[in-house]
Amino acid sequence: MPDLATFPSRITIDGFVYDKQGYNDIGGVFYNSKDNPSDITSKFISLYPDGKLTYLFDGLELIWNKDYQVIAQ
Image 1 (cartoon, one colour):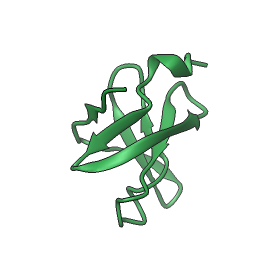
Image 2 (cartoon, helix red, strand yellow):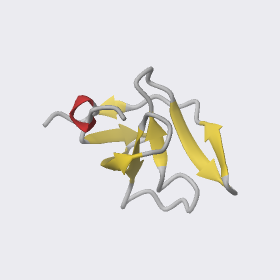
Image 3 (cartoon, one colour):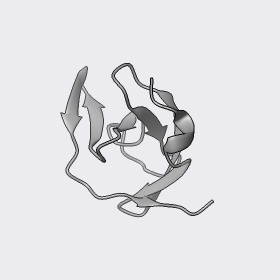
Image 4 (cartoon, helix red, strand yellow):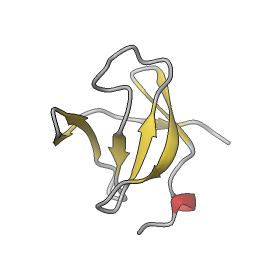
């Protein structure tokens, strides 16, 4: 498993704030957003060490071609 400390605690995607929650099963960490109203992209957003973002939809992990910004600690 990756070291959680190497991943940012908070990120923004499209202006919504996402907070780090924990590990996913395949080497990344997942984030949830309290302010994103979408049922699909407000929870279980995964970030991987290579910078790839994914989201879950209908049980499938899909690549999310978005940029994210790290919120300074």
